[in-house]
Image (cartoon, rainbow, N blue to C red; front, side, top):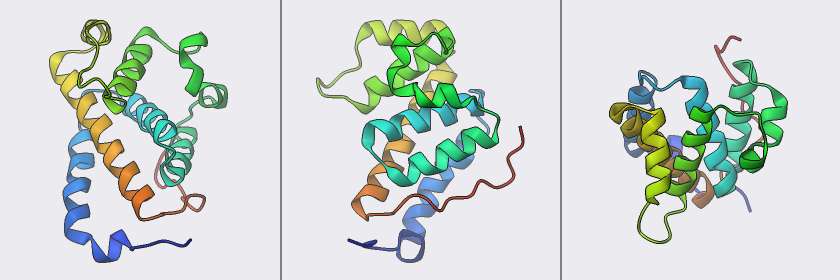
Length: 154
């Protein structure tokens, strides 16, 4: 099946609202490289081909190590990530996979050790934003593979 609706053409107003979140997050005190890693991990969980294509290429353009991308879905068993990154990844997974109507206290406790309250708010907003993009792309069958990173330097 092909693309269902061209969001960029038919949903300009709606997409402008979502883009506004990205503009806010681009000024966040949370490192952009960490936000990109979170975007990639959440997109793995959700199975969004377009976002996986985009964020893997953006991460590589920013100089991210390929090995860290290869094993990201098993980050708990890989000694490749900092404590801050692990706390962010656990937070992102818990917020994405809310099945019991809450984020576990132990995940919050670890996250708040690594992030200020403002950073944790921004991290949560980043997780909810990429979840929104994933769901839009999946719902309208937006294909991955053709994204080209622009303007990123190592």
